[in-house]
Image (cartoon, rainbow, N blue to C red; front, side, top):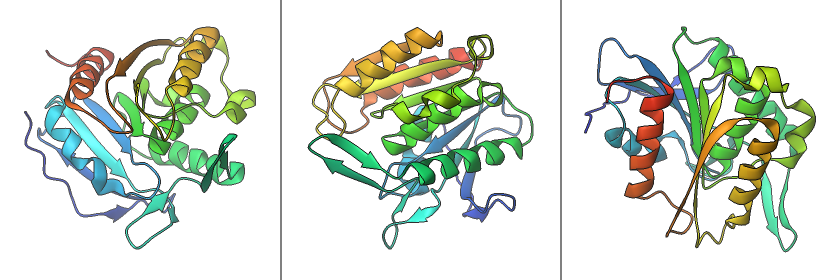
Length: 223
């Protein structure tokens, strides 16, 4: 278990995104960018760092749209009987902000991962800009069908790998979304692994253990 203290929130000047950074070593061998879900904030996923490899630099990013006193979103979404309805322009704007945010960071092997809407954004970034990340993870999220025209070529996607985790009892984003993402990544040739758990719309210990193992392998960290 690592002991990580995160910095106070700082504003990245090129994108205006607020973030907090934590690292338990002076010489990190990889970077994990964590994205929170809708209505939450960057501090929501800070506790995950305790279960992750010590060699990681962890960056918690705050979404740009404020939806409550301490709540933020990557884009506005409404849940309807026909599935989620969302603001496509906001989703694309946030994807571009994340692209610029990563481009401004010092070079380091990087994985982007997120919970729920954060996982959606991680996938959107990973399949459109695979050169920027070594891998991406979708934790209780989905892939936006609307991202299809922007997906990188099969040749470019060879360099990226993915991790999908979802709960069988998820009532917010039903498990069918994970099955769809799994099949989609198969079709476009992205190497990935998919895990299902006896859980709802949440993150549990078994999932974190699998995610940590995948991270270590993806970023070639010591076991």
